[in-house]
Length: 138
Image 1 (tube, rainbow, N blue to C red):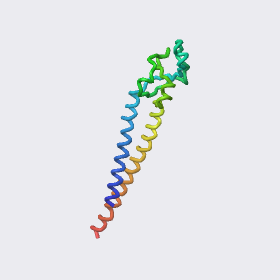
Image 2 (cartoon, rainbow, N blue to C red):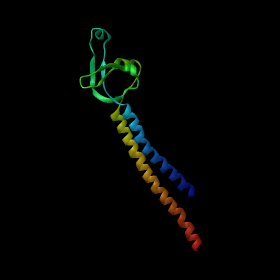
Image 3 (cartoon, one colour):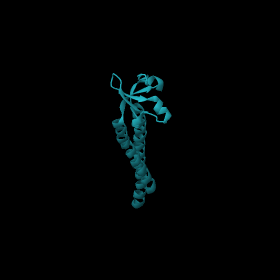
Image 4 (cartoon, helix red, strand yellow):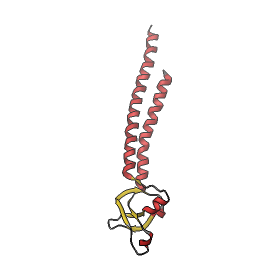
């Protein structure tokens, strides 16, 4: 029974650690996020001064490849990123709202697991202590 208690305690601690790690990981991604507008750039039209066609709305995204940035901003301050470059080099921008959503799910699951495993460890310990106490009384 002591091994069950130890196993449940270790699993509860790991779950609690995963719960806490989500805050640091989410913060790391949030610090790298920028307001980004993806733009489809036609090379022929770019030579004539066309800035490209916006794709979707500006959003907080993480793009780690500096070559993807066009060095221009939209009137509302979003960094312009070449969609053509992203597709050619298989760079997938990561939206911050996706990171927050997944971190929330992991936080919910690991928090629930930590609580349930902690309670199971407490009951396993009580169960292992109870039979020993009754043997010594007899």
